[in-house]
Length: 220
Image 1: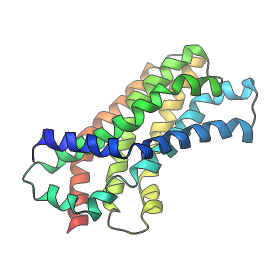
Image 2: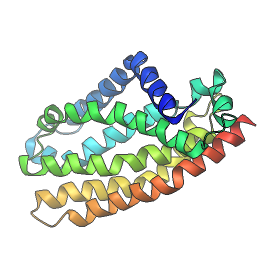
Image 3: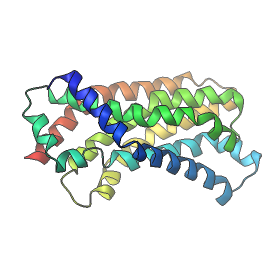
Image 4: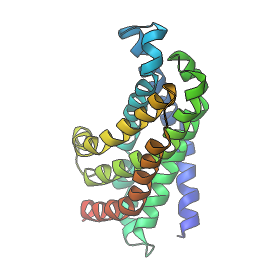
């Protein structure tokens, strides 16, 4: 096994399970659609809250997919093979998470023009929302992978994953929604995007190693 063969194999696995990605997108769309119906469908309410609605729905959709990211690999013995493969396990974890990020976020970005219309997001804030998702969601996946790896051997680990990683998601959603709101108010928003990027870069350095340690502990 090489890093390239591992990457292509993960891409094929995601393609075979494309229904899972479709389910995540449907879940995301339904959550966004229910917010206006359940609270207030007026433009005056939706426009200022659009960034928060989209980011809350995105976090819930990512939690839905990240909790089970290692489950099948644990049950079919793939995790053990990765540990003894001789390849650098943190790089394998980074490739695994990267494929999951691409599989979820790219389709989500494609439907974002429709979503932005559903929540009455002003046009001038649309690209700020896209940028916040691009620079913020990598840290969400990377931090979520640590929790998923820690609980992969537990039968009912979904709630534990949420309890472990949700506190780390709070700064991400605060900075992301602040960037969108600042753009709507005509205020500088680049600082918030820079903070999101910094969090993703820090997660990129730390998470693969922490995830690899958690995977080894779960396998052993």
